[in-house]
Image (cartoon, one colour):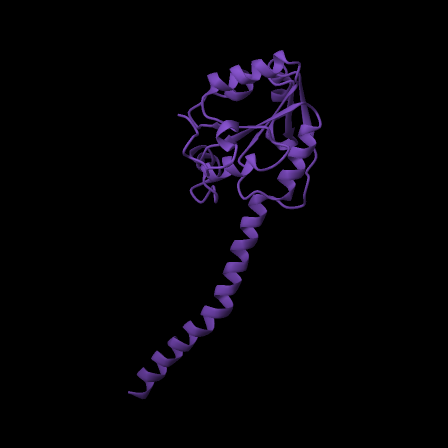
Length: 196
């Protein structure tokens, strides 16, 4: 599947988003042949925020080419439930290409085997947060990576926290606006029955 026609015309997004891992591997091999070091990071990147931008900027400092793996909608739903992602994969893929530190974006599908992207490109640096892998997994990943680096959190917010805050705010609004109206309707119905 090519990316032409999926994304907004006029951007270089179609040239930077990969769905085909064989083409991605050829691109990576070519870049490596030029002497470039490869950094890989992966995630959902749902509802992009400042923490994501800072995270990519720091990741890019560790190499010449930053590849960002993006979990498919189906993969995110399997892990986080039916209400996620908030932003569909085509929009998340395109959005990342507009961040200056991101060089290449690749879709990660649910059906792919464990660590398929990592094993395909064998990055010089795998950039991750502490919760993503256990110490044992990080040790095993070194078979496929030059190094596994752990990033500190880059912001006090997260997408999950933002969604939770929106839910709390919505619940509060409903409580303060609907509850009095519902109580009024109940009182009116009860008054009407008492008056009969």
